[in-house]
Structures are given as structure tokens and as C-alpha cells.
Length: 356
Ligand SMILES: Nc1ncnc2c1ncn2[C@@H]1O[C@H](COP(=O)(O)OP(=O)(O)OP(=O)(O)O)[C@@H](O)[C@H]1O
Image 1 (cartoon, rainbow, N blue to C red):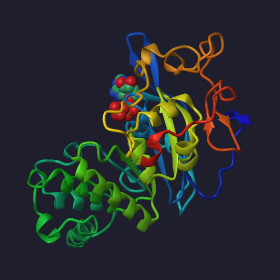
Image 2: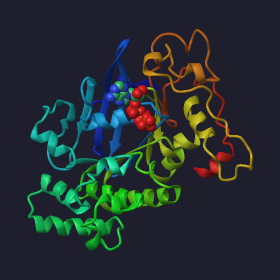
Image 3: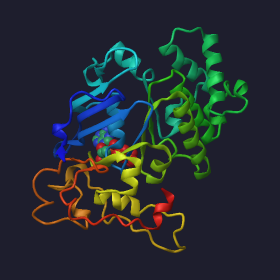
Image 4: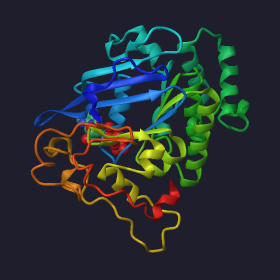
């Protein structure tokens, strides 16, 4: 076991994106506070990394930081986001000059994003086709006619029936599920190496959510794309991801393969999330054990382990003092940032196991 500070410098060749010690801050009445604090993550080529946690844990701020979408007075205060493209030299996204061609090429080109709410990603006053055509022409030297053909083909690929007709429709003429398919088409049409999907199914009906998840997974596999998938739902993680990082206000508190984290969670917070997941075989009326308390505001993050105020294993004098615990790297399963790892009994998988 060792701490993250001892992590190797040269990444494995299957690494496409490596975030080290990312820190993103916003001003508050009590001064500047970090919404993302010392976050390190690795995305492997052709794999899906899920970032999971309750609302306010910093998932979206992390993904927006990757694309440098943090608006002032928010700022990225430190860290490194190394991108290892398939062709060309690796570079640190955080070192690209603001408003540079390289940064514009990166956004929507090499790295693209699907947002939660399709209507915020689409303009209501342009046809869906024209919006995708514009996205293509921003990044590729093709004629309008070629771009239109590519658009129709892409709409077909994301399962939009009658794509030749739909291409000229406006977002309000489409259902929520179809709109999200359009947003996925727009995100993928320039063949990004990395796709960031920020809660892409949250705004959709439950029946449509499963279809969209399946579509993203199919497209990811067909294109061997690398995906960062943001969600608060561990059930979704089980369906789509290879690796998972669990966040608790601003920090990654557990990370590892989906199998390790969901079957043998180490951190009490991850266990709490799993215990509050509805099980397929849950008896009618059986109550889920939600984690007591709520995610603290950025201005009220407790000293010591940020989770200690909600943790049943917390020990006074150990967990409530000093800095937040560092990640303990492990050869046996996931890495976790907890001072009580040796004291916590093995995870007894309750009925909820059947959903994962
Ligand atoms: N522009 C901003 N200005 C100030 N604080 C912000 C800003 N954007 C995010 N935050 C704060 O940063 C913290 C992390 O927010 P973030 O949106 O990343 O959480 P999240 O885990 O993605 O939650 P959700 O699932 O609700 O989207 C929150 O406390 C949020 O209030």
C-alpha cells in the first residue's frame, strides 16, 4: 500500500486522459472554496469511466474542467489534465491558451460532451440538421452537402427513424428521447476520441433512459471511444462502466474496476450509496437504508475525513482531525481514502446485489 503522491509518472500506453491533482475553485462569502479538490483520475482507451456521487459532489465541475468550461470568477487553480491522442504528441489541456485554436479544436473535436438536458444543448431556432452540420463544419473541411449527408447518416446511426425528414425538423418537434439522440449524434459526428456524458438520461422518462444508455454503450463499443460517464446512480454504473470513481464533495474517495467497487466497496460512503440502491428482489415496503445526513456545502466541509459526520465507522480523534485522508492504493481491489479501512468488516452484500 502506498499513497497517490508516490504514483508513477509515466502512464500506461492504454491511458488516453490522465488528470492529476485537479483543483477547481469558486468564490464564496467565506473566500474561495474548492469544488474539486486534488482529484486524480485515469481514463483508459476504449473504456468507460464512471464518476459517481450525490448531487453537489463535484462531478460536473470535474467534467467541465476537462473541457475548460469553468467561467470566471470560477477558476481551475491547479493540476494537470494530460491528453494522449492516438495521433500526435500528448499535451496538458490546462496549458492550452484561452481562446486558442487548439482549445476550440479540442472541444467538440477530440473531446465532446453530452449534457443532461437536451434542450440546453440545442438551439430552438435552428433545425437539428443545421446544428449538426455546423458542428461538422467547425471541425472538418467538408462542403455543406457532404456535411448534410454525414448528418443524415449519423441520425440513422443513433436510431432516428426517417432521418432524411427529421434532419429538417426543429427540436420542439421531437420527443425528449429523440432530442437526446440528436445531441448524441452531434457529440459523435466528429468522431471524438473522448466522450463526456454528464447524466445523459436524467431528464428522460424511465422507459427511454434504458434505450439511451444502451445506445451510448453500443456506439462507444462500435467506435472504441473512451467515455467519462457522470451519474449519481450506481445501477447505471453497473450497466455501462468499466472503471468507477466515487466522489464526495470535491474529492475522489474510492476508485477501481466496477467489479471491485460494486461487489467489494471499501469506503463507507460507497457502501452507503450501494445500500440505498433499490434491489430487484427488495421486499415490497422494505425501506432502503439511505445515508444519514446530506452532502455538506462547500463552505461547511468538515475537518479531517469529509464524510466522518455521516459515517457509522468514524472514530473521534482520528477521522475528525487533520487533512482529508489520502487515497490508499491497493493491490487487492479498489483504492479508497479512509482511515478505518482495517477496522471495517467485509461488505455483506444485501438484496440490492441483484441490481448490480
Ligand atoms: N458556477 C458556480 N459557482 C459557484 N459554485 C458552483 C458553481 N458551479 C458549481 N458550483 C458548486 O460546486 C459544487 C459541485 O457542483 P457540481 O455541479 O459539480 O456537482 P455534481 O456532483 O455534478 O452535482 P449534480 O449531480 O447536482 O449535477 C456544488 O457545491 C456547486 O454548488
